[in-house]
Amino acid sequence: MSATGILLIVSGPSGSGKTTLCRRLANENRARYSISCTTRAPRPGETDGRDYHFLSKEEFERRLSVGDFLEYAMVHGNFYGTLKSEVSDHLEAGTHVVMDIDVQGAGQVRACGDPQIQKALVDLFVMPPTYDELRVRLTGRGTDSEEIIELRMKNALEEIEHWRSYTYRLLSLTPEEDYRRFEALVAAEELRVSRAAEIG
Ligand code: 5GP
Image 1: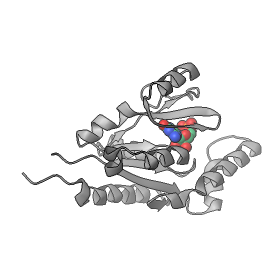
Image 2: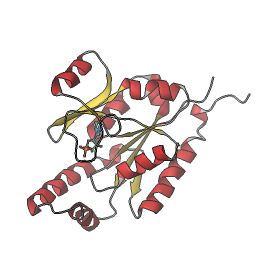
Image 3: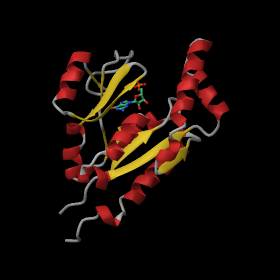
Image 4: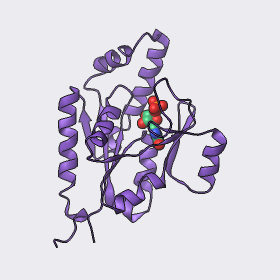
């Protein structure tokens, strides 16, 4: 028996820096980034198959009906979901998988009865250090109207209400400091007896 990979679920409001953390872990070959499916349109600079699998609503619903998704949710009016194929085989092979998903999806993964998933699961909520800092981060993104910023702030506050459902919480400071603690969590979870292989 080889060691199982870790399934690292990372949630948090937009502006928390969670996507940067997940992408960096994958870029440094510490984990595989689970590429989600979404029905939202690609943003400028996003590539199909790298940022997301961009699907039509019909295709998303077809995949849902045949049981392809580990979890899915409606976020801001669009469907998002994780394909089982992005996760299971990689965990089995001992590769860590990092998932950047919302609080609804995290709840579904936590509730799923699959023993492989339960053994692999680690969940983390990434949070801005203060509400003022969150507002600065959501404002600092560009030239958005006050109305859009208020909507993002409202969505962020709703998301933050769920942080106590997670095992770990990371209060975001600087990108470097955040990544150091994020990586330390992965390193600690790699030592868990429940996931360890026999010595050869
Ligand atoms: P965005 O459209 O800004 O890329 O993502 C919007 C939200 O959807 C983020 O909170 C992100 O974490 C979440 N999200 C992305 N992929 C998935 C997924 O596969 N499942 C769920 N439940 N949420 C996702």
